[in-house]
Image (cartoon, rainbow, N blue to C red; front, side):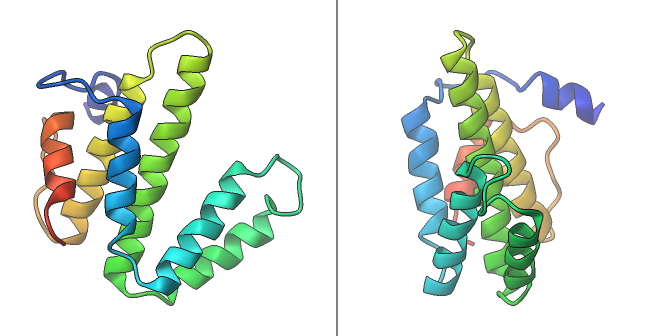
Length: 142
């Protein structure tokens, strides 16, 4: 059932374009401390590095994961959300470069990030959450 939900995000409300997702990423990153922001930027560089390059190594990724564990739980959760949102942006960009719609990936990213936020705050995760509801949830403080 969860896989079915992930394959077919609900379509309610207005469309989510690339700029909406970028703004949401920036909004989430604003909640990080300077240390968390630095780590998030370095993690983003690793995801953009070509495979096999000096920055894309598993050792670098492991070191960054270890560094993330030194952050407060709230900041770790923000980093996790940023990774999900960034992956959604990357996948939507790739789909659109190939002439396919990318909105589905943006929707999956915001729904997943909102679920991650709910889980970290001990809230029940809504399996029927729309992308619009997820965006609203991510914009809530916390």
